[in-house]
Length: 166
Ligand SMILES: Nc1ncnc2c1ncn2[C@@H]1O[C@H](COP(=O)(O)OP(=O)(O)OP(=O)(O)O)[C@@H](O)[C@H]1O
Ligand SMILES: [Mg+2]
Image 1: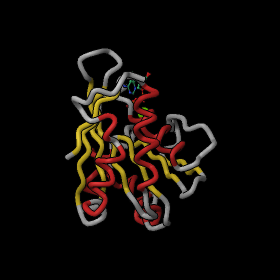
Image 2 (image 1 turned 30 degrees about the vertical axis):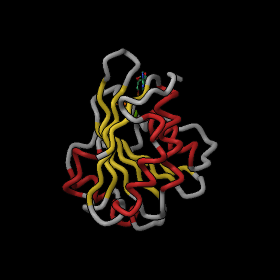
Image 3 (image 1 turned 135 degrees about the vertical axis):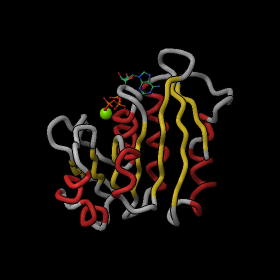
Image 4 (image 1 turned 90 degrees about the vertical axis):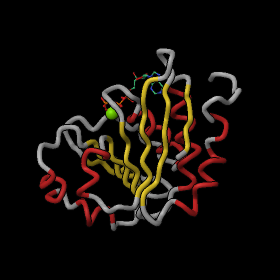
């Protein structure tokens, strides 16, 4: 588990942009956290780090949207999903096998319908209004070998670190 603290929305984007270079084809990232936690902000920074130039928005009506970058970023928000079956209907297994990076907002809620091989980023409020605590944990075979690289990538945001606020 890696814990980080960000001090603004741009700071969260900057952290996520540092995580993106670690991404490999077929990766799955689950974003957890309440409404307004900063999940979409994380995806925006992650996309920037993948070289996506198109602006990333909240997928309000579509629940899966691809963005072209170094790897294809597939952004899903399953908040409005009512049944896990809809995820299967969407062809989630095929999408995950497509060689892109899949990032799912509220992914923790549907984890039982997904492969047990992912990086989960849980976001929660910090002490100040614009502060967020990000807890990163990994499940399955894909991420343990990258744990130390991930720790280095977000070292500037280490919870309790002395980095100046962005
Ligand atoms: N440190 C921070 N990191 C991320 N967002 C922050 C931070 N501080 C303040 N914010 C604000 O919190 C909000 C986060 O919104 P965002 O859409 O990213 O959340 P979300 O988790 O995707 O919500 P939803 O569940 O509705 O999709 C934005 O208004 C952003 O400006
Ligand atoms: Mg969102």
